[in-house]
Image 1: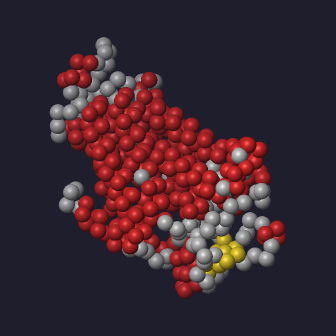
Image 2: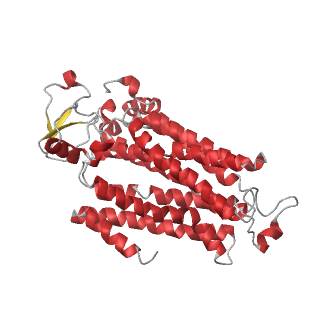
Image 3: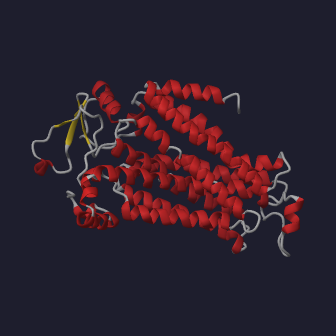
Length: 399
């Protein structure tokens, strides 16, 4: 039973009642079932975030007016190749402005988003972020049906989308850290991290399906889907293990419960891990041992356990600065491919918008296998940094 019944999502309350009455065996294995639900829901959530980022890379080819002769022949009366203000000679520059509006906003808002995510319920944080992301994605598409041609409209839409897209990563990675701990984390995160590639593939295929007939639907459909999944998270996402009576083991056989009575301490159960006492209400368990160790070595314990840390304190965590720089340059290449690969394929070949978009998905297919392989090798060798460096060196000549 939860320590606070009101914190349990409405959908989970119904599932709990049904499982007790109809499937008591499933109720007995609730830890596993909750972990599966967290894995699936966070996977779907972040796949949807990436799905909503992809349509613009696919529709660029029809917005700029560079239609193939085959496509031009298929257009109905009254339709044109291109959509103002992107149908002029400066189309590439305008697309760059849209991408920059999204990415700069995304980068800046991520700081505030992480700060907020540590202080609010992640169920509300993610579900509202997904619904609002869906609204802004939808609004980009209805520009066509509403005959909106203002560049500032599209820029503001991209800024809004960039702000609410930042709710995705801090939320899902914190949830997975809380529920799965360190055991086999590399493989789990490798499989789970394929959500980015799955989302990119889905976003590309959906947009490609509509790009030559009605490009507005390339945005409308992903917007509706992410909004629906956001509502699903609101109903079923358990953002704290202890509210449903679950206490995932971070490290088997090394956990020692330090409280004398569960009834007295409730959901503030403490765990001693590598001589550092941490709380399940703390930041994600992926970072907890390192954080505890760095605090004990470099800083006196000025704050209570489980309180969020500042940006400056985070930089003292070993490896944060190095891996941040590594991810910065990796994302630089990844986002270039994500936003420009379909247009590049079309402009450098005789393929139309649909086939160019479909072909670009092979980049993300490779990302799925690469993420799983990297996670497995990380668990096998225990040298995640070496695996990361090796894969980046191999990828460099290809680019």
